[in-house]
Image (tube, rainbow, N blue to C red; front, side, top):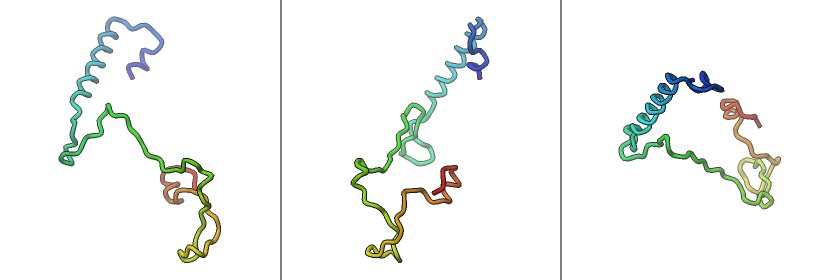
Length: 100
């Protein structure tokens, strides 16, 4: 909010002092973040300074992926219609994603 309020202009001496104080408070708050989560003993705390990562499952060579079909009563030798990858409709609606 401070940055929005002073955007595009030179800071006054009082604003420079306020900015310095705010930055210092943020620094102290970051230092106080625990290294371990208090709720689960000996588990690491996902701290502010860590870079979040995700894993995505997907083929490196899509052309090698065989088509997927619904099966008649789960029998591998009785494929029905071909299906495309998608998340279940209830999850799509809940998360605001495109439904299959």
